[in-house]
Length: 356
Image (tube, rainbow, N blue to C red; front, side, top):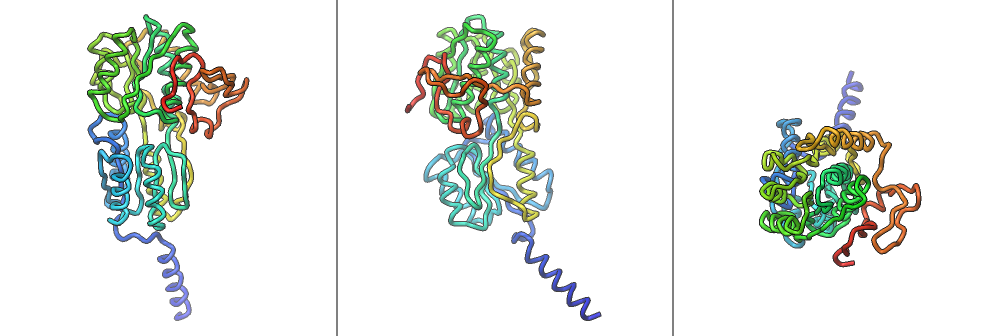
């Protein structure tokens, strides 16, 4: 009997020692680039945080810091969160990559997750969504709906994530309308409703009647509605802000990823790596198609279905950049390394990527 009890005690101790070393509640931290009330990018990440709480209840404790600037501020915020006892930290913007990588080295027992980046370490993973898939559908709609043959794009920063979506938006429009042109204005900020609105206003004044954006507020879409033109929501369904203008919107669904990664930490199975979520996994969603004819809805749905089931891929060669250089050979499909390093405009875009 004593032998059985001794064996049971050893087994119990071994199980305890193998469990993740966190007391009571798992502490989950988030670093946000904008305010949680931006109704776009950060808003959707915070929905993911809230869904963690709903899913795990009193097993977790979440916290966040919003509107964290890139550089030293980001490094300080991430380090403070790690020192404060966080078991896993999600940094939700491209510019947090290097600060997080640096802090991760200092806290080997903390798990770090960086959104939209491409660097990993033993305790730092990267993750993103294939938002270019929904953007391509938007481009198809824009190409079919434009009356001026001029579409436009409000961009935040010239990084691969944004360049990739400009290209796929244009390719989508060009696939149904060979006469379409695109204007691009960079605002060099993720969240500044005033700058975002002004950029859209300038391009609308120059003839743009289809407004897309890669910034975080509904301001460009609201500007489109005021001007009597059409556009697309970004990161979240922004229909309520411009019900007469929104054609559809990309909806970022981060919740499944966040819940799974928290579960992995709890189970002691968390691993570093890179995640790139697909439309087929329901993490890249689209708002209902509105303010368009039924034939446009039907064609857009056909493209969306093709992307979802893997039969249609926008970045399939031959694709040249706008200097004439062949980037993808005939039939070649861009791999993730190509997509994550995309710093060129495709043929037909009459502009130069800033800094190149």
